[in-house]
Length: 423
Image (cartoon, rainbow, N blue to C red; front, side, top):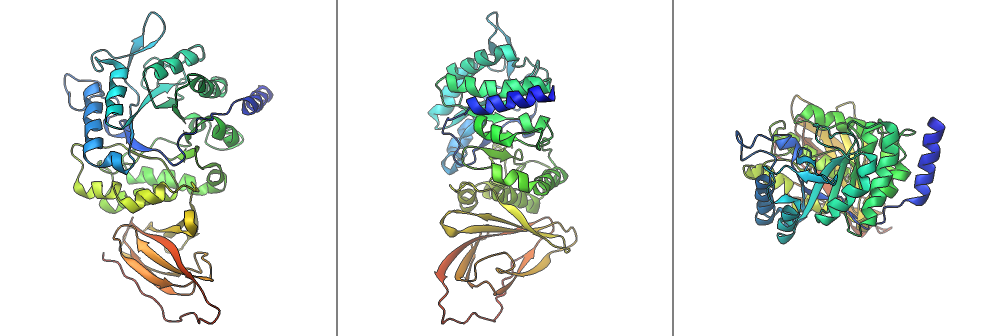
């Protein structure tokens, strides 16, 4: 059986390429699942149930409150929208909760300059028990989504076998291509195979999927964020090279604006997901989100970094005994972003370092901008000492760019530069 699977994967890799030209930078948008889950009781909770009303209200806010203009353009339905299959075998949304159908919702999103994403499952049932997309329904469902004017499909993997996934995910990729509509493809396949080779063929995934979930679902807690982050760091030598324009690792949704993260932790998740070149899918109630959390999610420099056209995923480059971790991501134009992240839980920590320790060139003079405060730190050479103060569970994030090349006649300064952040 293993030999048959390997041969099938090899054949698929040779003949299928997604080739949709989409998601050259990580996708950004809003996704229902983490905040609203599978709440389908619209009698008891009409404002928060998975329904046409909820998605239209979120679409309105995405357009009105600046989200769309910053790049948050995908309005994504997750599980629990399906009612049944009709007598032709086609998926039909729940008629009570989506009375006007999905095409209506897609048209509404498009009228606001947004894109609509939808959910299906490569199995007999979705994860929450609604009708799934079995192998014999792949082409039909792809065509249905195209006719509904859907812009992204997330294909989950509950209630499926390995053999069904091996055949089904490439088959859906080809079916989406065949519709003639540009539909971004989000695959949950690797999360069901342990996320690592040899069970996961990332070369194949990059050819058939625009993004993929590698690991466990995120939950609304700091522990869950760290659990996922640590897995990505542990396997960064495998994961970092496979990400890039059109094909992204997805550590799952942003929790910012919900209940499980402190202010420092919310800033940390945003910074760390950005340095990982991760998709930025909010999953919060945009009707009630605080100005503080809006500022985190709408930080223009943060978004510019996340959307850098080089599309290189960052890495952890230092892990200190002091429980400070340093992440670095190269960006276009010879710029970089560095995140100083504290795993401490006691008090703000004064972290001493230099650009040489962070592997910056000795032939350049750099300037750094604090991504959250906007403060500028000038005249950074490779041997310039600096200090950053990092709050517990928090980050300091620098956007670094060269301002001039070192002249041979210029002596490097031995005077330490001290920069202290308010805590």
